[in-house]
Image (cartoon, rainbow, N blue to C red; front, side):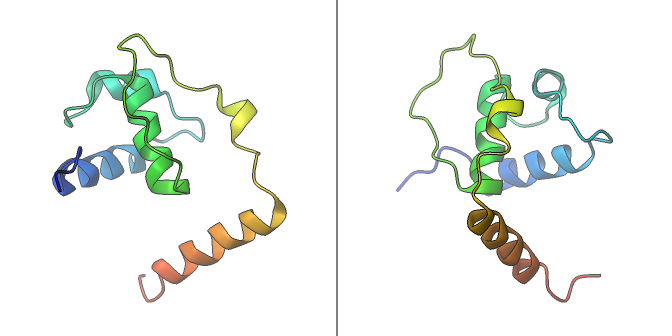
Length: 97
């Protein structure tokens, strides 16, 4: 089975997103400055949402696809789903400083 993104590229993406000083991420800017092979802002955002929220990865993206408007999608979790995400995050990072 071939993976679309190598573990190295995924870790690079996570590191780049972690370095964003603002609460709101400028996906277009990250796409321009990235050391990953991802230059399309929408694809960059899609991979991040897949890693963070288990959103599905699209099979193909239009090269001109713009990032999603997060105001309309970030708050789409039910309280139960939000609690599950936080519990899984807490479990994954237990024992880390």
